[in-house]
Length: 83
Image (cartoon, rainbow, N blue to C red; front, top):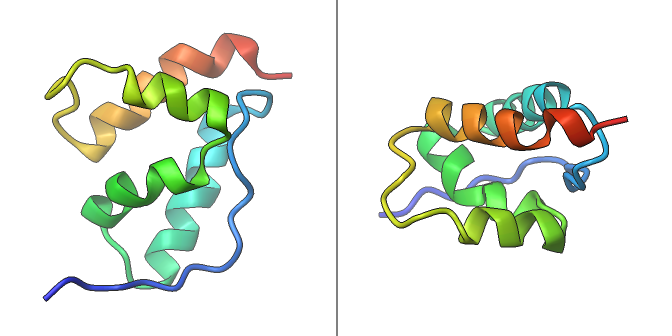
């Protein structure tokens, strides 16, 4: 049976804020609602601005092996664009 979580409001990531800080807040919100790394990975696209979601969906199929790997990819891709 699929586990459902109810995280509090999470500000969408738009590429303007520091991705490390945003990921920390996102991870904390999901974990505090009882989620794990699997849930964080699956729920991430809901919390991304449409432009950032395009980045996520354009990643090659099966190129992300873990939540940690996805974190590193997001940070590498957007660290330079944050204010």
